[in-house]
Image (tube, rainbow, N blue to C red; front, side):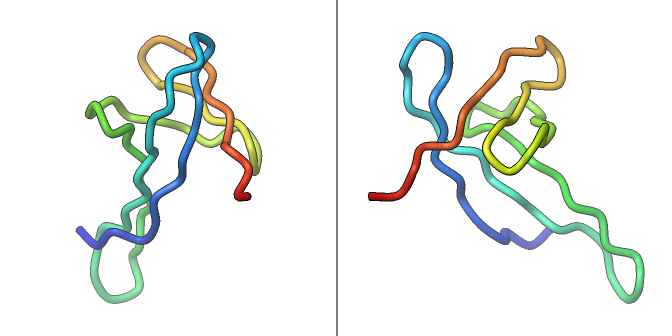
Length: 65
């Protein structure tokens, strides 16, 4: 599993977390997976919004300054 990037996010309580994007697979088959720094699987809703798969909790990307 290859780490592609880290995305800083904030949850509804104002806690800052990190979403990690990984790429699994070899050859032509490449699957991207996203996990929160606490281990939960995350889905991308759009470019700036993510959701914890199990709970549906929304996370917002923190804008770079």
